[in-house]
Length: 216
Image 1 (cartoon, rainbow, N blue to C red):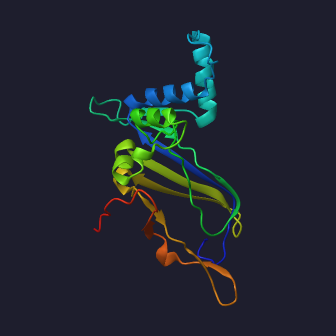
Image 2: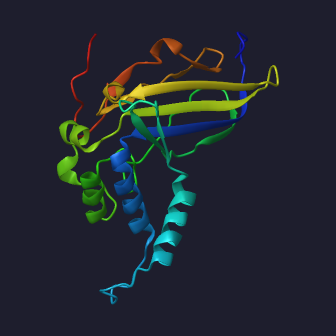
Image 3: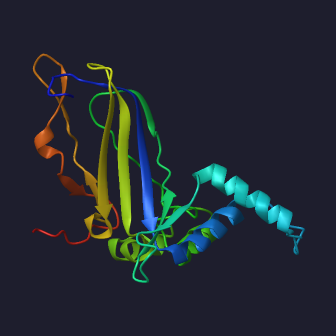
């Protein structure tokens, strides 16, 4: 941190946003709203009013945040429209970050990374990933997004200044069926350290196999 050893980030926050095609936004919202709607099994024909629909939309917005869409060049008919949705990750806050932070996002029926068809299959399987899709080829065919934007913010314990870092991952940058190798190790004096030479190294996960890696 600031070219000094042992720098930590206080009140660190990891934020992930996914960019998808605008035409896919509606299906993501509808799937999330349906997942939050609880109807009795005896009620085979639930009465869904406009007020109920708007209430469910509000619940969805509080759950995953607000959907943001914009046109990169409104003055041109060739301007590309883009849509951004929050991507929920486990443990997105860290009070005193200093070493390694692995972000975990679950591919469930509300995940904006999945296609509408894949979300329905997960929902039919009681929220669990279907066994017949537990291979790298099927997982690759189920995910549908343009970019994932990961940002890290916090306060440096050395300077007291706000720090910020950002990384953008395109669809082709995602390797299906792999996990990062362990970066932590101990010196002879039992102190814990990070091997930064392994920061981009991955290993194949157990079960399902990994897709071929681009060696370029």
